[in-house]
Image (cartoon, rainbow, N blue to C red; front, side):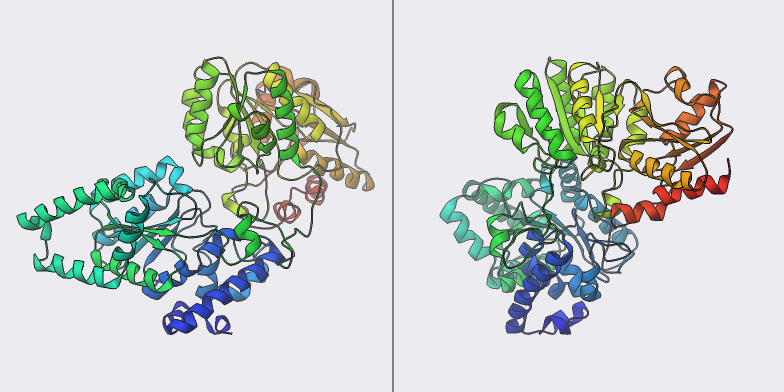
Length: 616
């Protein structure tokens, strides 16, 4: 196999045309075989095989800077840069990350995991190169999905005007910025992507010297050509109006043509957009037919395309079904998603109430601001969003929602540790920042029953902004509904009090069982809400506590445990001994949730051990 001989990008450069085609076929088979065992992002990587190979034919990513947007399409890049043999550890504890990570390799220029920032980051690198008088290429690889985020246009606007040599590769596997015009589009695409065209254009520019735009004849010809092109081929005008040279659209599975276009883009020494059309899931029929299903997938049977594990409902599904039920009762309820209808459980809502369902694409800030507008005019908007992506709408939460105390409801999915996607996707901050925004009520269900009850309360009973935060996956052993009031006692005990919220109460209850075996009687108290909190709410449950341990899967600075301790101390009822068990100041890597909880010391064993070590 040719792939087995590829240990570095230099090996890719040494292959002939026939070997390259074989390499692409082997890469696709390798992706299917690997991801079927570990799970991961499959369809996006299958679609980027030829494009990634072409990049490594033309550029040296140990020196040239390749900035991925989102980064879930980096698997081929990793396989070609010396990490192929690590794919059996993909997305596992201490294994290969599913996203670019500079700590793994000098070929990974920047961390990625969220969308729409690549052009901005790449422009910063290009400007650093110029200021430091160095010579290397800078590329931003962005998909059409990430172009729905406003930050992408901020970067494009500034990059195009900068004049900095920079290549933006638009991997378009679903849509264009503007529709192109049939036969004319196809014809011009063929002409513009042939080497002869680039050689002629290069010769023509050189004819007018090193600075052709200073020549009046060149400027006149350029203006006429641009006007004609805009009339016949509107798809390129957005980028050219921003100051980019536009090349494309290019068949993203024509390796030869991709290599020629990328080489020409490098020689232009100006801001360039290379528009590449690819097929998501290319080469694997199941993924081509269902690219959404195989975007992010668990382990599956490569022969049938069927998942190896299929569980029951999870928190996302329960949220979506409950919201749809409530929407049937009240026509004011609307649902908003940022390109995550399936992931957030909103597909049933979208089918039942299409007029009240809004997918705003990858634009979380816009989603929050639009929700504020809906709420101001009397609707009840519900924005379902992953916790880590909600960070992108922080300003709007304060300025657009909180200041007017609007009744916007947030379904904060993937709160806490999420597992295999790693540090860019853990919901480790929402419990901190939502609790500090004035007027917000933050509810934390620990079971499906509590999620159903709390969502109804958020919609129909609690005024102002409300966030209901819940984890990825299913329930633990705790499946009751004890969601009345700000807090509730789940287990009595006189030696020590363990305080927690959300599904972390499962670890608290299990720790109490372990402590009982060691002769320590632990009381377990569950917070039903983490905001608002004040002394009157906490005192009935925590005043006079001897030893208090607060367990949570959030960062330490500003965590709920610190807030609870400060409120109790201010009211003259501070615990005699305080133990905070949380994620501290460390970003958690990839791994299963139980593995990460154990590593952070917030599982049952870690909680019990901390209490035993502290004494009671």
